[in-house]
Amino acid sequence: MKLDSRTAALALAALLLVFALELPVGRALAEEPDPDPELTAADAADNEADDDEAPPVEDAPAEDDVGDEAGGDAGDDTADDPADEATDDFDDDWAEDVVVDESDDAIPADLELNPSGEEWVVTAFEDDGDNQEEGAELQSGDVRDSADMPVIRRPVPGAPPARPATTSRPSRPGAGGDEDVPYSTGGKPVSARGVPWQAQIYYPSQSSQWAAKIRAGTPVWQLQHYCGGALIADEWVLTAAHCIDEEMVKAGYRVRLGATDISKNEGMSYKIDRIVRHSQYQQKVVPAPPPNMYANDIALIRIVDDRNLGRRDPAVIRPIPLFEGKVAAGAQVTGTGWGKTEAVEGHAPSAILMKVDLRAMDNAVCRNRPSYGPERVGGGVVCASHPQRSTCQGDSGGALTFTNGAPKVVGIVSWGKKRCSGDGQPGVYTRVENYLGWIKQAMQLDPSRNALP
Image 1: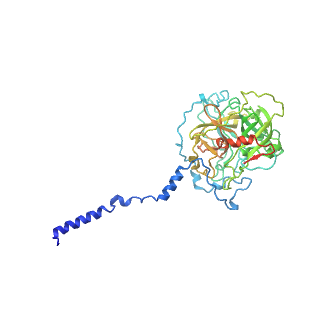
Image 2: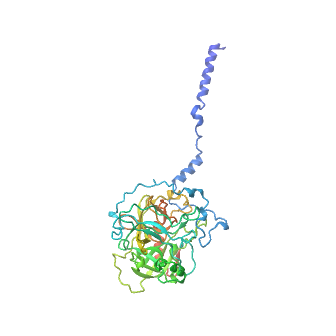
Image 3: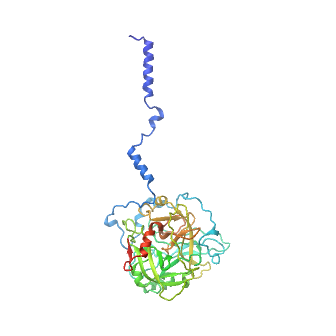
């Protein structure tokens, strides 16, 4: 049948309309294509992965790139990283603000030492110019150089608020202040009764290798001090693996309990009978592949009374239990250690036991910080930080505990960034919950063995 021109025009219009409805037009042409099913499944698996799983182990770097056994320059691996230039611009919204209420703190501040209640701030620390804290290196010989202790300044009544902590000399970009080192804490002074589990690892004599430092005015007690620890059973002290080894035991290092001011030879001193270190820890920095200093930083020290010291006062010396649960992100935690204090009148420094209150950080957030990353932050550690407070070097191995409630060890002071600038960079602590089985086995280990996988 032949169509007239009007009918043909209507039919053509209808066909064009149907064709137009079959094609995307306008904004639809700018939309992204449908996701690839295989890629979507892979992304979903990555997002659902447990944050605390151990990070992937990188391929071993070329021999020339691996840090040497002495630790090398711990800043070399990040010196040219442009991300390091932005470490001051941190996002501090990773946890809810903490309302400070010290009335229920498990570790009370010492009101006699700190009647004003203000925080003591790090003002300086000794730096021998090698851009690395002594104690961060793998040292040889019987007697170790003590780690440089931070100088903590007491608050002056009526004085303006203290400035943020700074180092004794400006940090040079890529060379002085961002390397990974063992460190201690500073904040508010506490008494031995407030931290009855606190232990000190120290050398009880005077070494000839300290002669130059002693002539320069360094007090002997500061050189004798090496690390902290936590008494977890009558005869066992928990500490970091980098804090003790067999050479130190043979040299006569000891453990002191019940001390507040270690410059006064306080407390009770015990012989180190034997130690058990984690065999998968080595004091090497990235890019050295595991085992290195970023995992398994844990050791146990068995102590014996070789001086007939007698019964301990449980109000001053008693063990602390281990935490057997999971440390939640944002949890309030407290670290303790010794800081060298400096009176405002310029009196000789002392070494008062200090505490600093922090917040546990989600490991994924911690890994995203510049110069941290998955090669440093695995599932066996806890990160902790605070935007306005800083940790500083000088005393590793001490316990990280919950700020409130019954005291329990949740972490061991392991490593942090060298600079003490109050910029909220997290410290890293060995996560005790991951090593509960290891600790139990280590205590039952045959005395002829000093290492446990």
